[in-house]
Length: 225
Image (cartoon, rainbow, N blue to C red; front, side, top):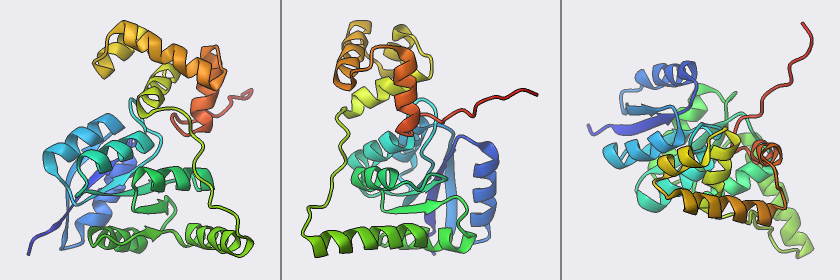
């Protein structure tokens, strides 16, 4: 029997270990690789050509949204399922627009994840029940009211989003250039274009933007004690 192959992409080791343990008991599923950042996930997908990727959103170097875009564009035979703690409509819209075939919340039961993986292999979409209800309600209201279905309003290109993430992670222009295989002058150009488009002209503002868009993980405020 040919097994259904899966790649796990999450920057938390304990999360990947838990997912691997859940999937290990399924006779028809094999985990062929693990990635702790989005860039590694893209590289491993090209290497192993898995049937399904289980993808987190907030990961270093390249977030799950951009990794999903690159995977579905460059390796269309691989299906991407998002497994995230974020359930906001904007995240769901952006990830499905990027090509994800499923979207599950991290509190999802193991049985749902396994079912989602098998459905994805067949090319079928699968969403957590709460997300499915919201999507259905939205499209029903849009149909009844005659309003056009909204499209994501993100104005940045894929490359510009990569640059924003790396800036927000504290990387210098030189480090960004090395990470993206670009010249420093090109990075500086992207950086200026991003700031002009967003009307944000400092790193703190770009960092807040990156957190709001899920490009990097929001850090909890540290209180006294």
